Amino acid sequence: MRMITILAAGSALMLSMAASAQQQPSPQPRPPAAAPQAPATAPAIRSVNVVDITELPEATQSQVNQVVSQRGDAELQKLRTAIDGAPNIKSALQAKGLSSVHVLIAQMNDEGTLTLVTKRAG
Image (cartoon, helix red, strand yellow):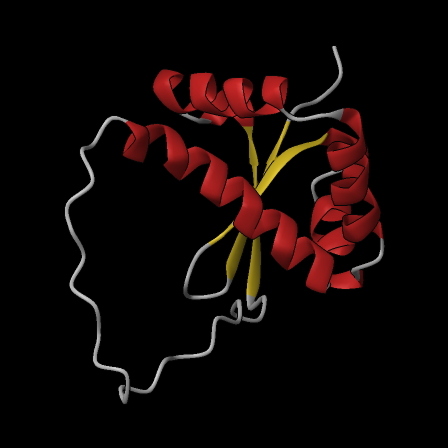
């Protein structure tokens, strides 16, 4: 499950990189050295949302396709292996008549909702 979280975070990062690449970086103020820092842990998966790519707006479909085209087969296989190893995610896919083979990308939000974008063969 940790691998899915990492892959989901990586996928989210890839999607956000395109948007942030167009922005000029502004200088970030440094926090005081004594300020406590929040741990950088991903939220636990609370729910799984399975969405077919055809249900997404055209612009979002283009973004997903771009990320998928830039990703290697090894990364996709890691995602699918992680999905197959997580019973709650696997069962959410099976409820829709799908499996990890249909997953294109995974993204997790701060509230713990994992969204899997899928595509049926054909």
